[in-house]
Image (cartoon, rainbow, N blue to C red; front, side):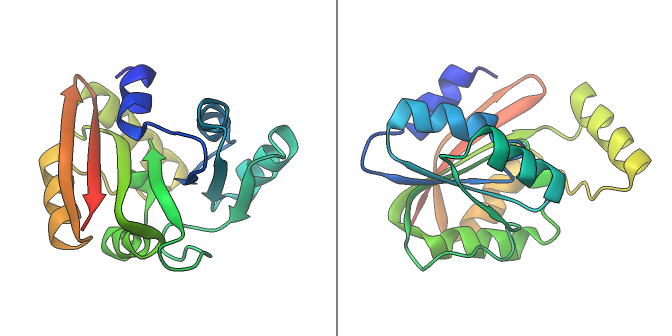
Length: 172
């Protein structure tokens, strides 16, 4: 799945507040900040990844936090995204409600994730078991249904390509 398609769906512009959930070491957040010129925030629950992000990308407004407890006010963000991290969320329904809470009405939520039944999905599950990490993987159809039923989102666009998929949803 191309990074161009992700950026097209996110469509970052100046003057926006954008949140990266499960930002890892901050590489995607740095690209989004460069493309938008706006404010980019990032949350990462892993201390080592969070500290690496703080060192390498100090301009990103980062917080040590997980998706299930976002440390931001209601309707604070114009856009929220997560790339290859949703399968780590310990409580997907709670995380989706948190995303909806911090996202402005009509705001965009973009998800890049792995298809669980693909070769890459099998590899992720194998390594997840090996290191004892949570792997709540969902198919594109399953996630679309959760977004609409639990999160209060309307799916605007959904693209699958091989082992990965992208979903763009709007907060209702």
